[in-house]
Length: 258
Image (cartoon, helix red, strand yellow):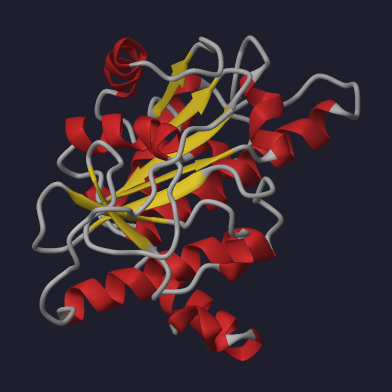
């Protein structure tokens, strides 16, 4: 069972949205719609959260009970680090589900957006002892840059949060054993593109393993050199891909912008 926080008794927000806040809402709603379009959603579960620009300690998250393809810029809910609703909203939020995100947001100043999914390929690879193998160019993006966190059950406690962020350290992505995937981005676009790359790597690995033959794996030197090239000096990923993805959504359904 998931516990929810309702909007009862909270004070309404004051003042209009800034341009940065409005754009963050649009980008986050787009990430939810794209996840649904790709089949990455899990009924009404899992979350993508983003910091509210110019409001330290405040975050945006999906309304609990809506499918990912129902998320809009206007129905995203503002919450604090404890999952309490800030202002007023007709929707409730899954505060328990946000706890994992809150731990990462609190520990990482660069974690503007935290994306957590239960995608089938990601869960399947997380259950393999060796985890993600450097068997594809997509996987090499995470060579030496992928964290792991062992499964501790359904309830996410503050103590587990400390262990999770210690395991994540400064890495951009994580496989949660028997559970799913997580990415942390400096922008919504970066978290999304990192997740797309990670899930593609997991899908490639599973399909290659299904052939039942040994995989060709680059040596450590080549893998490290390729990973450095893909890291590209720490450039923020998604800057070029994101406008194209938004154009794709706009052609299909612009309602995420509402």
